[in-house]
Length: 178
Length: 431
Image (cartoon, rainbow over all chains, first blue to last red; front, side, top):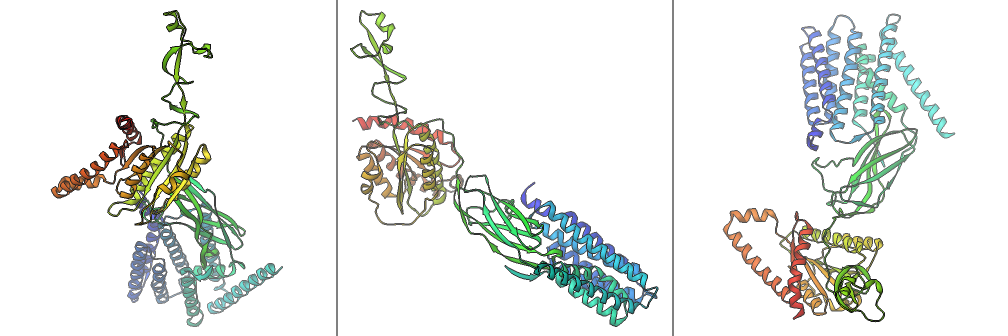
């Protein structure tokens, strides 16, 4: 296989899966939106089109920019619904995050840089950790919303996360100074 | 090394802040749920940011390689955490981009810093002979979760010599003049050797082992066989590095250097003393000597051959006494374009040196193809060839044989041709 062809093929599967996931997210948003929120469907299609262009051109920044219309579309369609759509939002949020990470990975692979196995494993570990933690936190919030008002749960969750992060940073600083 | 925020941080921060604000202030919990992965990424990235910066050090594992071999560049990291990216740089022009465009195989690599320690290895393929500088690398360390990146350069350029691939020669140019040292060239005089020369009558002091019993049996006297002794010679490679505009000087000098390396290897293997004189913009020389160390000296000198435009006359007489041993065998490698070099060949022949010329042909196959289509070009080519033939004839008249060599032709064929022509020119020398 010639060099140029190898580079064109590099990251092809990651890009295909990323585009597939982005398409699925847009489809879910478009089909699950109430008829009065046509804007959500349009935003989702615009975001996914931008995402597809970004992946094709290999622009990591544009992939990030595409996140805003897609998440806005998901939010508009959720808000317009009669009751909070927790599960749908969890799935859409995580699916979109995974699609963006895959797109970034595909773009990076296209540069033809040699990667060690440890490097690939590390990337997978990081994304998996983020996804699992996000899943745990949102599920916990979903369960807690049965016991307390949503806004209270959100504020409390925010405070707890900030406290934990601060504690972790302080512990690390202490360990380094020793 | 400078620290900068990545696109990942921008996206994570923007979406997280917007989502949390909308959720808390606007009473839309879905906003927080949608941006939850980005918020988690932001928190994890900030919390796991390493307290110290990674320090890279670059080591080039090889200082001499052959064309086609790979130079190993190791980048060792201490401190920090995350994933490291290395782009090994090398002197431009000598490591041309391959068919992969700008991305040379193995010149760039990603690796992981585990507990602040890692070694990333890159390979740079040597595609052209010469002296190159390797060891500078563009470095980027992405912190865990990829929110921040440290960027910079590291390493000091290290000189790497890329030798041409050895060409195995079957033919060895036979000199007319030899030294009184045992070697591989047949001498014209009779003495102790292997190759049969003649017989003569036995005289007192002759070894009994030299008696030719068959000839002695046919007469009443003893006859002894005489043999040609195998002796060594002094080979001086005379390299033309004059710059002549209008042709691809690098290709022509490259041809000359490839031939010089092959000749040096084969003559040193035959216990000849080999030296080098570079005559051009600069005049440099390596005194003749034998052995593998001499081969290294010669190759180093050849690889550092430079092309400098110079209009001054080069007086070869000044270095003749110091540089060229008497009755040396001079092999000139030249495109026969510069009059100063051609004059030097006459001077050498006049001083009694045995001179042979390998003419590095400047005309390529592309030229021939375009000539086939263009009548004017064909005529110009014929005129040019006629002028060059005059130069060759003048040299031949002084006992200097010329054989042509061009890219793609086996050097052995050129040496065969040169040997054949030298046999003709010997008559001129004897006259």
